Length: 357
Ligand code: DAH
Image (cartoon, rainbow, N blue to C red; front, side, top):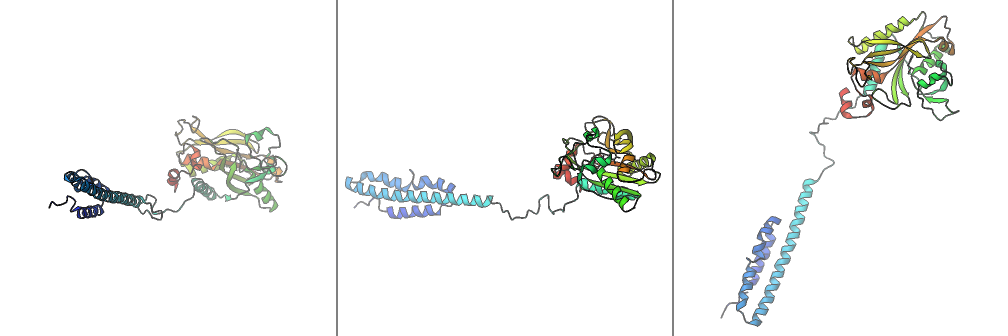
């Protein structure tokens, strides 16, 4: 009796299915596939041996083999899908980002506390310099009436000098009567008024604060900026006192290698008036883009109080005289720290801010 070529079919199929289950990666599956189902497989060998059978027996055996092959193929494709899913999950697990993780080795660790902005710390330093010279520190409102910002400072309505300040008007009351202060000078008026009301002359005070102008920002200008105003009202005050204060301030704040100069200028509230300039620290006076190639940077204005201002607040100009000045805090910071473009002060770039912690 001849043995059937399919005698071991069940056993072989069971072995193939077990082998398929033991494949643990797609790579292993791809490698084993030809031996499980391809030309080199037991099933193919069995297929070839069917040739010698009687037609009926061959048909039966063929059908059995076909079924076994289908089972093996199904098992193989299920295993393939399972291994692919496994690989996908492993990758996902690897890529997972734990947002609750604390990255201990990050550059920003340990966390730092914030610090005052360069403008705020400059304001404090300037106040310190003036306090050391015997000044008090006062402040005033950022929204002003036309009277404080202009009229009391000897700038009547429609006076051409109003063109010196590009004003933001606030929609309040009559048109053009309420403004965002264009300079800190209106605080002088508040201070003199209250000194008159409380009979507390003389005044030696500085008034730092935020100002606003309809300016297009550039290397030396911001639309929102800071000034520090100075006011002295006393007996026998002259321009020489003013020049002495400006010189003392420059040396104390910028150091002795920076020169300052006063140039004749016009301001409606002082007579005589001057512009106060320092050597441009970006180019050390050589001339550059920041100083418009002049070698000098204007910090502000100053002068002897105009009698019209004293009389606007009811101070007797025969008994009292005084001087005033007002200059840019942002400009002082810019020159002290050689910042070529003032816009860096408001851009909030941490790399810039961190230099001044
Ligand atoms: N308020 C002027 C400005 O912003 C600067 C100024 C000039 C202030 C002369 C003064 C002064 O107190 O006396 O342009």
